[in-house]
Length: 441
Ligand code: SF4
Ligand code: SF4
Image (cartoon, rainbow, N blue to C red):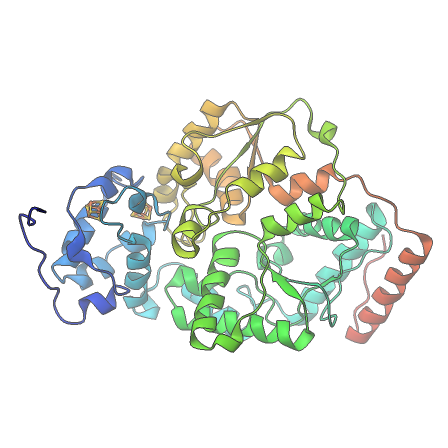
């Protein structure tokens, strides 16, 4: 006969459960496993740990937690929930707390970025002409370098792939635009990007603005339908791949007819390689040791919310590009967050985020890797820029995107004269239609 619990769970005050994403906090056994696994436990000046946060919430004290820094410094990494005996979805609770913050009190630029995306279609409010000019110029540069006939198709109807750019790359990280483009070129892909509402990243997810997230997903569905694209790819990690998937799932739940095909970026790359559309040369990466960093939102959190985490696919893709691949420890669902998840890259909690990332520095150093490969632009910036700034002399590694390693390993089969001529003619017609003159290279 099962033993009764020592202290029967009490009912929460009215409204509290619904305010916390419907989660049953009295199920918490107060064991502290969550706080033990949370990298921000013990952060100097942080008055609470996650177990204490949950105790406050379980007694109905929402506002002291919602008004604290905790939900924002929390990166939503989900490590706390992995060993929770009550299987409490702590990240969803943090999201619900972020949503309680009055919008003018959301820290940093998260609310501003959300509003900019709602009003202009991208979080940096980049005007249409600048966006198009960047696509035209960088496309022409790639065509001149090694991909004759290449251009970036904009709003091309009936493409197989609808691809959403990341505003950071359009704004300034120009070279990072080219990795995916080179892959599309090598695979002779039928693809396009949208002219409007092109931001890949769901800033609503970071800001705790669910209505905005839904609107971003709804717009993506609308573009996909209007252009009659076969499927969409969200590049990148938390805000893009994960946030968009959450939004699409919610849209489909509200309206089953809204369901739209969205291929996961890793599945897409695996398919391209396995079907022989890409040829890769491992010798380009000889002499270096590589490691893979599992982003929380590609693995652990995706597994929790969608039933499947992408652990094997990126490792397989990397194994097609490099010979020397080592694991970080712990790995896969137990991997440490880099410290910038949950919108922490632009938040004004830089030291806190770097402190969170101290385990990442240690993991990389212990692995002996020369190159850390990532699938998320926030992980990329955090591991490449912020961690070396705070851990001087301890970060002697390079950081590359997975699609960068693939692009650098590509053996391009030259386009025929007819293919090049067709690409050049399509580019000329498109840019004339938009009134854009690409730079010549
Ligand atoms: S691990 Fe789960 S059960 Fe234990 S204190 Fe944390 S939330 Fe409660
Ligand atoms: S999601 Fe990560 S940072 Fe947030 S409480 Fe859990 S372990 Fe800590």
